Image (cartoon, rainbow, N blue to C red):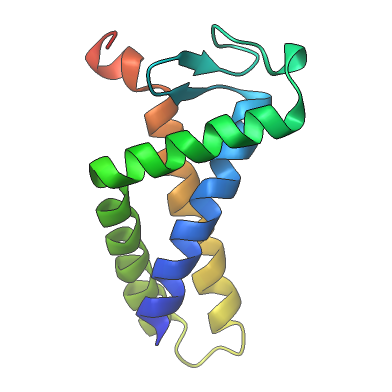
Length: 121
């Protein structure tokens, strides 16, 4: 059950992290460029609903390209490891959720700086 909690939390929190990154850093939008204060398209010139729609499209696009495999697998790994480590703790579920949110945030951050790692795409 811990694995399922980790996988679902990683998937859902990755969308929320991508929306947050669009407003405070940047997120790549397929066929459009980077959206955010440090991207080509500033979120200050757009409405919040338009930003959320663009980020949701990017989340689905990159998810189909492999994110919907990487995120649940990392969540399952986190759920297994953290569930075993905190098996006797009363805060086991909170720790699984916290670590799954952390790993999904790290993966969104890596996506947002991928052009610095492998070059412009």
